[in-house]
Amino acid sequence: MGLSTEIVSEVASSRAPVARRFYQPELDGLRFYAFLGVFLCHTLPFEASFYHGLHLPLPWFWGATVKAGAAGVDLFFALSAFLITSLLLKEKQETGEISLKYFYLRRILRIWPLYFLVIALGIGLSHTVAKQNLPWYYVAGYLLFVGNWVHAVFGRPESIAFPLWTVSIEEQFYLIWPLMVKVLERRGIIISAIVMFILATVCRAVFVVAGISGGFIYYGSTARCDSIALGILIALFADRLPKLGTLARLLLVSGGLLGWILASAWLTDQPGPISMREVPGRLIISLAAGAMLYGCLHSRSKLLTGSWVVSLGKVSYGLYLLHLTGLLLAKGLFHPVSGTAILATKAVGFVLTIILAFASYRWVESPFLRLKDRFARVLSRPV
Image 1: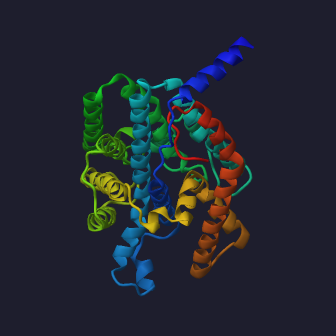
Image 2 (image 1 turned 90 degrees about the horizontal axis):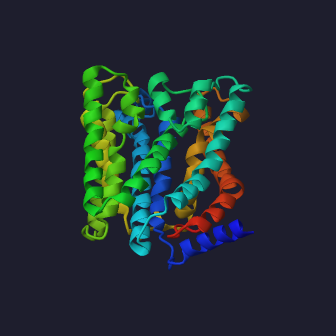
């Protein structure tokens, strides 16, 4: 009885300073578009010949645009870093400290339920469905949250669990960053983020010069942390950055998209053969992700804050982790052969992905998200 009373009292006291939720709905909208880019990248061909066959002008541009959708991952990284850093700074300001225990409990409740469900689903499908293969070393990597490094060594698995590599990078970030924000002053946090940003470019250059597999550039945490660093820096200076007008927002977002497309046209296939192009190319992609995040902050455009896009953004975690499952289900239902039938099947896969994501949010994620609020010192988005 004494122990349970102590826990309840500690949770209650941790929530005492909360006045209102920290929530920016435009970022949910941005999350959905980040997912949409990844989905298009995983469903449409990169080859210019395909778009030439459709009689589209500049067929290389359309192939590069689809390929650029992979950079939605960089936008996810920047978004996560921005939100986590903003919440940690707010907690530190309002309560005078950061509770690492409650932070890790909140992350576990948010990330783990669906994450481990997808691992289990991937294992099950690898034993029951043709062309689904998830060897034990991938499973071990996912379970230990180092799946991205397993991908760097062995490449992409033919499994619906493939997207989990990005969660490994985020979990590694969540493990280290809260402690740094807790112990460092503002100047130290800024310096750490700048070092992190520079580290990514240096690591990519070292990997190229050393002739190390391109997978280490595409999947390695140290080579992909510049987008995370930009999200941190935007959070640190969010209240000091110039307020943007409509034209400035449009220029930042469109410029970011164009940067993604041109860099993707220049780069080899992901992760692809290693080349010095990876160094400036990935830097451009990262800077473009930061530009789009800044351009969308505090926007009231219905393209970002409309109820439909915010609703889809709220389930973006499920959309991202389950989209290969949706595509696999659609393929199993229709067995497409022709080009038109294949595209139609992928459109059905998109619909099925949305259904799976909402089902996951309702029955898998929400119960844990409601529990997560009990350990929040600064409340974030409502369930």
